[in-house]
Length: 258
Length: 268
Image (cartoon, rainbow over the protein chains, first blue to last red):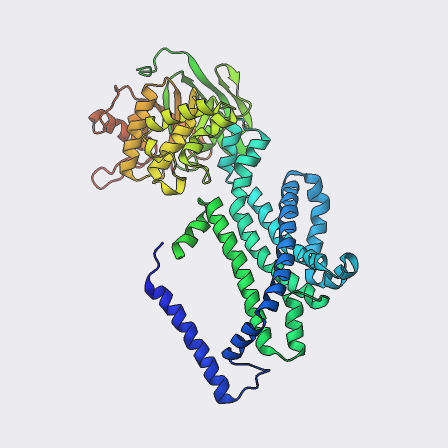
């Protein structure tokens, strides 16, 4: 894929101009550094503390990805059972809907009591927020199959397993990927919120510490780190999606837009 | 050539007083018909006349409200790979390549990998898609998709082939080419074909008999035998005159002078 030089130069120049303007305005208007530090202060905060930043980022990454992985495994499993079992649809599904209506991050204080102070209470919150987009999207993907595709399986006397493996599951993949992308971003947010509530490590904890000492420059650096974290995860999923569902319309459209 | 002229052969499909109604609306009203083994039958009619529903009942996908369908003397009670269907909108699996799509029915019949590979390659050659085995449906043209759909049905070697407006979404040129191909394949196959179409010329070019249906309720209005030898000349005077007859029955007769001859007892 060849990208025209103009499409690289334009955003790069734009960001340089933005940073220059920021630096200039902060100087001219004399904004106090604890309200808005200049970009150079961010840079020095980063170079001074990148080791700490990296260590805490690793913690948050583990919490988010751990929680997400759990939500993926349980979410897909749950979606499949709901689609195939009327009993579960009548019993567990309404329960899940009630849970869905609750703000999941409000569970964070409870999770400390239930799961403890460490990594796992954060994973639990990341899991809770990521679970629903996975379930909802997978259920839709398993159900919304073109009727002709199912009729074809009927005509050819395909087994239930054939219909699941060869029709419903592949049909659900694009939906599942859409859910995964939402779930990943949410799981990072979930981990951060859980760290706000009770933690002694992770980026959420770190940003609170920076706030307490009015180190706004470092707080902003941490936010940028969080953006980077989410972006890395999204890009990884995007690449995986292209590999796994090259036939999907959404994937084709994304390819076209790059 | 196995298929030529339908005269004096054994009955393959027997339809008796078929009724299909949704709530109180009769979509199909007492249709009876029989189709000879190896016959090519076309069904034409205005949209909404129940011709697709009729096909789906014959294929066992829909249970009729009343009446019976027998194929080879056995009552149709559900879908059967021996009586296979080509859908209007190709219905290819987007996540499967052309090869995998054609292989689907064979996979479901639990055939061996090698047997599947051999059969699929054979059929892709037959429909002229051997170069495109590894392509996904979205990478193909409309005509190629219908070829793949046809190959997929032929792969399980059905003896009855139901075609539900298979070329309806194609451009005029591609449609003519695929009609020729379908004819070629059918002539060598001995299969019984029922083609539902809204294209009168297509029906007359391909079929031994053309059934004209009326709408709401769907009834058989007229059966027109086409005696002409194959391959037929699309421009022949005989076909042109038959076309005029069919269009007349459908209430679409050509304008004579400036006056459109009205059909007194039929309207679309």
